[in-house]
Length: 329
Image (cartoon, rainbow, N blue to C red; front, side, top):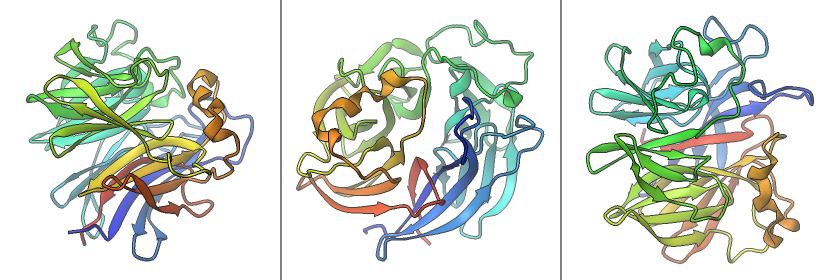
């Protein structure tokens, strides 16, 4: 059955030009997108900080969430919230000193798998108690080879530059895998030599990692979908979703949900960054005349390889999109 509504999580940029890393976003927002009307409605927002954030200008964004039955696990940079659907009743909040710049949380069985991107680690929690069961480094190193387990990283603005920048976790062959922005790949956390080379030398960052039929799909930040064979661990197809459109979205592609043959893909508004090498894809000729730069959710028909719709987010609702999920209520 086709989706009618989607949850879109992200954050709103601060109206300031001199903010440093770790201070860009002043408001975390969870939106409901009605696909039949194209209208967005705010469900949740968070702009205050607290003991788990820096004292001034805390970075506030809802990152890639996870559905677990009637539970929505919704992360910020330093906290994991448990909300009961459809009323969005807050039931728990988990936070640990090793949480920094969280990009995603995933619920698998009795565990929550958290990408603590700022520490290049993946943290595994007991989802019933919130206690840490394991910490795994996304380069196969000791989790504390670079950082200290005695420091509360939640109150630190930035730990950049990151060594690997883990983004998104999925399961393959019964094991946890994570995408890595810097290496442009996905690796098995139990054996980092077991990897998928997603960008294949394109020098473009990668995100996501969802199963579709018998393939695994990743997003590249330049607006390409990458399809991989889970057996050979090889790329079998790369699809430019805007290949048939002249005015493509000028944004950072991240966030993906698949419903049958329709792919819902998030595009974030570009912001100032010191990592200008990550924006080299904008020099491609297909971006030069692009003027559309608002945060948007794109509906792409995989069967016909066409863009069916672009759902632009109104100003001041979301600038950066991290995750897209179905809302079946």
